[in-house]
Length: 151
Image (cartoon, rainbow, N blue to C red; front, side, top):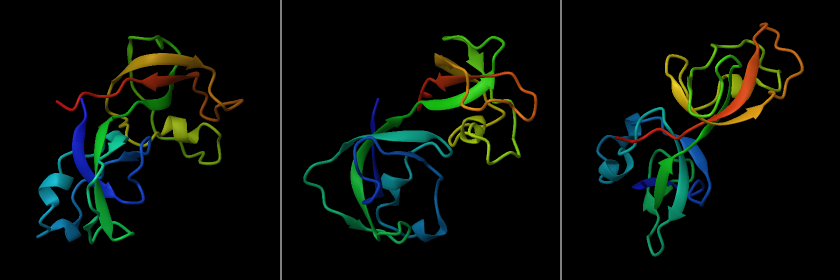
């Protein structure tokens, strides 16, 4: 189910993904805050449509100085999880932080929009992660988490 919200005009194109970070101090007193602050904080979203015929509205938060109306849906998250029990339909959580930021799997071990304390339903299993060796000794599998419900 899509939600109408306002995002920075540079981000306002179909397919753009972002993690909603919540209210900024510059939002205080903004007449549009009710239309912007309607997403779940920390959740990853994908723009599914840019509303036609809407104007850009002034915004003190976004670098480009304006926002546009778009439709968004919770997005899937691709991640590395423990190989044991990693199959479509099962639940999994991230293994934990990784200090190896140069590793080709780092963004999958610490994906934006996912929390280490949460469990996610696996929608698809992709197989081996992009690294040759996990320097933490973890046996990992690359998966896609199903989008979370906004309810």
